[in-house]
Length: 180
Ligand SMILES: [Zn+2]
Picture 1 (cartoon, rainbow, N blue to C red):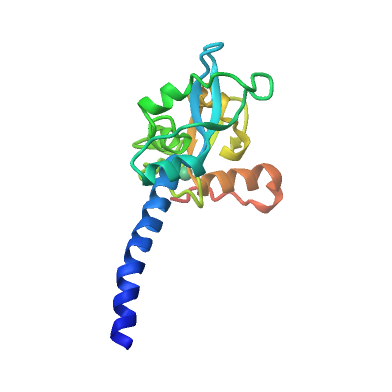
Picture 2 (picture 1 turned 135 degrees about the vertical axis):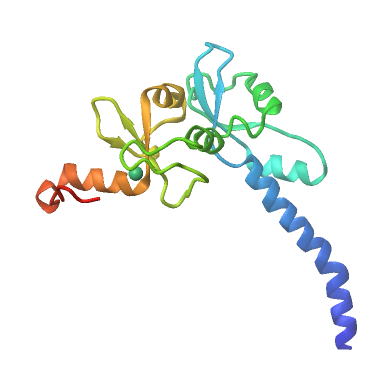
């Protein structure tokens, strides 16, 4: 009886497990903010795909892209979503996490000169803007991404934390002159 149960579980469970894994992978591929150029004004815009319908359609081998959010909404709510053509041409290339990872790849932290490899998304690196302190990505909107990347230098997580501590609590930091 036990063997029959395992057989039934195997027959029914494996396809369900496969579909679940496929669904998660498809979801991860379409999930996240994207940077596009709005066809209405030619300016950068931040958009998100309707991940539920896109992942469901992908399970059946179809592509179904709709926007669920746009930085130009509600002013342009109900637009024809012509920017979807840009997403369909490069679904991974316009993902913000991929754009950011590619920007860091091979660069050095402006403070400690550590070379960036794969991005640790839990302890994300930061930015150094001219005439400003370090800045976290949570303070950058998607639509200002091209401008910010063009004007900033990369800072690793450790140096960002140290710089933040120095600027907010200088009394807690003791410079080590001559330290390596
Ligand atoms: Zn550093």
